[in-house]
Image (cartoon, rainbow, N blue to C red):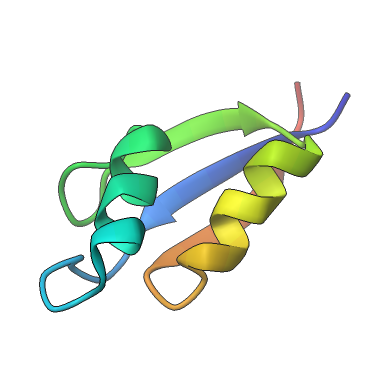
Length: 61
């Protein structure tokens, strides 16, 4: 299964509550923080919610 590196590039301040909670659920709390997640439909849906706040890269397992 592919892995995704998700990096927060913009602040959640000023966003909706759902966007801020999605960042927390992804494990992102600060700008430039990164987390590695499996490429799953649930994660892709969360990324779609905050696509303007994060950068996504595919990494080797």
